[in-house]
Amino acid sequence: MYNPQEKNIDLIREYFPSYNTARFQDQPEPNVAVQDHFLRVTSQHTQELTTQSDIKVHNLRYGGTDDRRLVDVFYKNGTAEQPSPLFVYVHGGYWQMLDKSHSCSIVRPLVRRGYRVAVMDYNNCPQVTLAQLLQQFTDFLLWIFNYAEETKATEISFAGHSAGAHLLAQLLHVPSLISEERRQKVGVLFFISGVYDLRELWQLDPVNPNNIFGLNAESAKELSPILWPWPADSPFWSGAHLHVIAAEHESVTFIEQSCVFAKNLQDAGFKVTFKIFDKYDHFDIIEETVLDNSPITSYLLGALKAEA
Image 1 (cartoon, rainbow, N blue to C red):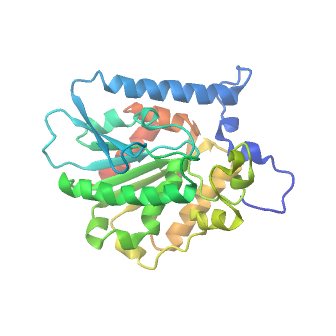
Image 2 (cartoon, helix red, strand yellow):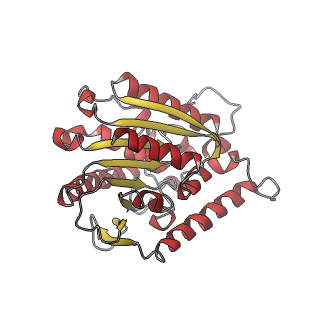
C-alpha cells in the first residue's frame, strides 16, 4: 500500500502484475511469457467470435471520427430487436496499451445466455492525458445509457479489468450525470484486479514513461479512486451490487488497493462484495472468462443471476 517512507519495496514488481504470476516459471522471462500468452489467447477468442454464425456484432462509435472511441456490441443472431440485459466490458492495459481485440473473452458465455455485450475501446495515453481519458470515459457512460434506453435494455451491468476498473469507478464518482431512473437499471459492477491509487505509479518511469499520463503529485491524488470522497447519495445506487475482485497471484499492493477500495465503498453505503480468487493471476482471471465452467465465469454468471 502507498507508503512514501518505505524504502525497501521493489515498486516495479509491485506495479507490474506480470512479475507476480506463478505460471511460465520454466521460461527465461515468466513476466514476458505471461503477457505474450494473454495477447495471443485473448486475440484468438476475439477472432473465434467472427466464425460463430449464432453471434452478430454491431460496430459503433461513441465519439470522435478518427480515433479509438469505438464499441462493438455482440448479441445472439435473430434478437437484434428484442429487449435484453446489457453487459459492458472495459479493458485494461495501464491506459496505454491493448484494445477491444483483446477484450472479448467473456462475450460468448454471456451472449449464449441472452445478454447483449458491449466491448468498448478508448484512446490510450499519450494520445490523451489520463484526465482527458476520464472525461472521454464519462462521455462514454452517457452514450451507453442512451444506447441502453434506445435498445430497451432490461438492465445494465459493467465490468472493468485493471486500468479499466479504475475508469469504471468514474460511474460512481459523477452521479449527477446519471439520473436516478438510470441508476435503477444498473445491476452489477465488477471491478477486477483494478488499480485505484496513482500516487506511486505515476512516478515510475517504466509504468508512466516520460509521464505520458500527464500527471503531477496533485493530479495523481485527484485521479485516485481510493481517495475520492464518495457521494452522500450512494443509497440511490441501492439496486446495484459491487463486486471488487482480486487475484491470488497479484502483488501485495494490488490486493491491498482492492481491499481498501472495497471498504471505502462499503463505508459509503454501497452494497459491496470483496473476493480474492485462488490460483488466478492478473491475466488468466480474464483469459478464463471464455470458459463457461471456469471459477471466474461461474462467479460472474452467478452474481448476474442473483441480481436479475
